[in-house]
Image (tube, rainbow, N blue to C red; front, side):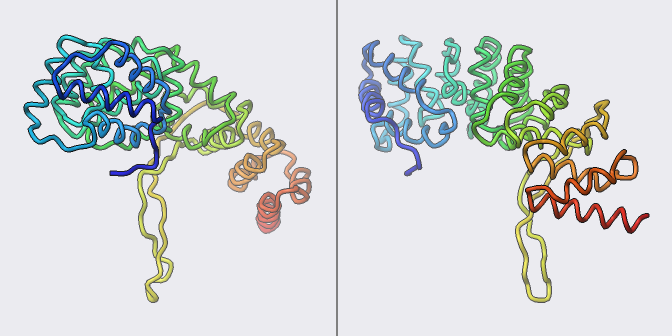
Length: 339
């Protein structure tokens, strides 16, 4: 199976050499295992799914095992005498080996990739592996450095929320990881100061739970990336967090058979004491058209209670953004009709 991510050649060669030692039932050199672990630590966490395919193929020396039970006994025998192998073997092809590696793993993940690899085992296709991963996460997640946990969470962009194999016992492990006060503080700081990546989409994923609710007013006004400010502002103004859970087909013309894809959204009510008018007034002067549009959409529903509307609309009709000008024109027509 080919993927869209290739391992560094040096790491792939080390993994093949390690796999040959394991298949022969011989103890590999400590330096070789350390090189494999260091190489895995340097991989991007965002590529954990595709990279794991390459890793398990390299560990199995790019061939399907002829006698899986014998290979399993040899590998687990070496693992019993060399627990540091567990960091690599939790990505092995064989589920029994992954389970044994998780039971033996005692090293706290030091990189976002290794933490993502451990988190991925919570959604493993094999039930015993998922259970072993939950026990392992219970031992190690509370010791993970906050910056490693935050980097992993932002790299995966909340995709663990879409996993379907795991039970609540495994899902709660991820909630506990990010609920740690030190992790939550750094996560809020990253959303407020970072400017790389689709942070607005990632913030929506984290808003499936109340973890970051208290930080929304600050993010709406001070976050560096416009998508984060717009997302936080929308949630505060509408009192609802929304995220996509799937795709459905929406009819455009049933007679002609025309349809189009439309997102399926889930919602969670959020109740925070905020001054709606103050939020809108501040957002209408934001440097980003995305934030100004978000404020205008809310203003179109609550313009009767908004002060100085007659002074603001003409300014927005001269905005440099065509979309903002269209929303301002719509608001002008609505207020003119209602008056």
